[in-house]
Amino acid sequence: MRLLQQTGQDEFSLVSVPTHNTESYAILSHTWFDSQEFTYNDLTTGAGRSKTGFEKVKFCSKQATQDGLQYFWIDTCCIDRSNNTELTTAINSMFRWYQNAKKCYVFLADVSIPDFDTVNQSTWEIAFRQSRYWTRGWTLQELIAPTIVEFFSKEGRPLGDKKKLEMLIHETTGIPVLALRGDPFSNFSVAERKNWAAERQTTEEEDIVYCLLGLCEVSMVPIYGEGKNAALKRFQMTIKDFSKDSTEPEIHEGTVYLAAGRLLLTSTM
Image 1 (cartoon, rainbow, N blue to C red):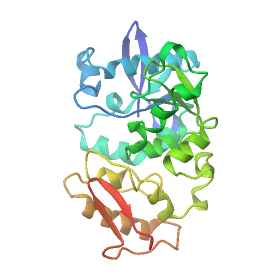
Image 2: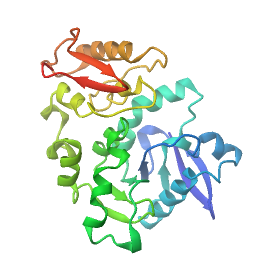
Image 3: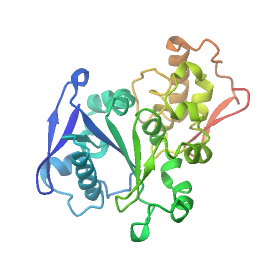
């Protein structure tokens, strides 16, 4: 696992640490925007500083420092996505990395707070409910896995944490409050957990399946290009073999299907 640390004014370096004995770190949860994310390649070559994504790196570093944390993690620049072995490890470890973080910062790029007005929730609640963040597949586990999740506007202004905003988050996402509070997954069936992603979307069609691995407590080798239907079949077989949820039904045609990058579950699930 690689972590970021600030080495100077707007200067950052990567530190490799063993995943079983990591340093205390903050972690960022956010949505990606094409061609604007600050990547692993940008970091290692010194490029990409004009991208809007670099502002998220600076924000996360500043917030971590304020919270007394020397290290932080951001998926876009801590994972070398060109390395298939590394990407496989990251996808299967992601839930645990978020779970082990001291704090998770949610950066809402489409929620703006004018004049530092964070006290009056009515000024940002509508934008909060309509944020793109709630529609993406990978942000589901990033919301549930960490104990402490703090939300920030695009200006970096605090909106509240997961505990304070739990009813607003529950109403927006449909995720049970007890799941947001960290109740054991054994209290929720695998079918229920999959249903939390029913209206979410991913850029890569297979990711709507892969983003459920940590939530369903299984591991699986990602095969990009296999298609969402093939990925779902492998996922279901993995669940059947390894899940402790003995009530999980088998796949039947028309029961589980995918469309437009979304995982759709019928009531029979």
